[in-house]
Length: 373
Image (cartoon, rainbow, N blue to C red; front, side, top):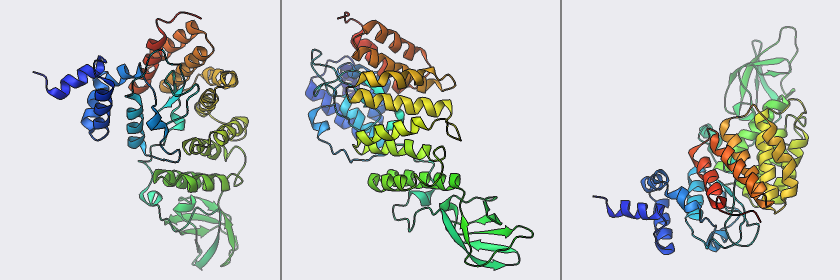
């Protein structure tokens, strides 16, 4: 015999619960991982998407909220389990990200998929990088602090991007610590205490990206954005392109959508600067840029970047699901329901994540029986 909770899950999936009961169940799932998984596994989340909206209470949440992956999922869950009148006008929202403004009023419509806009998974960041009280930020230059038996000590370390084998002028690093390192002095080279050494730009940018991620992981979006902006001049346009892309995502999470679009546009303009962007980087950036145009209610501007993203072939299936889904949403916003159905269907044919398939399926189901205007 089914438990009372199982019965409510089944009723939710079948949309037999009242709006009040549905919201109560969703709120309960925020504090119960097992219930959350049960709702998803039962198809309740997917079923609820058919009547999805981000309610007014959700829209009152501060734009500056920064959350980790689990908290972001909970926010989205709460947003998804709100019911609406199916006659209400459509809008676009981005899944797996913070609450976003509607295109046409308060009500739900096509769901856009853009993982790059969501808070990153920071589980691989070293512990010291996740410390919100770091005593200093990555440095691009340092000095030789000691010399002994053909070895030099410098006041730069792993925080600054150094690794074994890094060349700092006449010094090749052999031992790395958090904030200092030692290395052998090249044969015939001359080095003195207090001489300046320069971190290779690519290593410095990588160190800054680690620190930006660490700051974002502890909800310090403002400092993360400041640090990313301050390092944009640290290397060539190709070397700092990843910083622009990360900054754009952080801008969006902080509610600065205009700045996010500008930074994605700048990154796209530098795709072919050395080192050139990979097909995956290009597709992800263009997909995010197109999503931001669509969220602004400007599908015309989304056409070029989204089609360019779709033209990239050497990308993973889940990214292709996102792009094809967004092409469907774009066609829907332009009134071409036949193309929208085809694009959503192609998205579902790809081997993407269960979550992204659920959203694409929702988009398709919502317009399946609509007639062309």
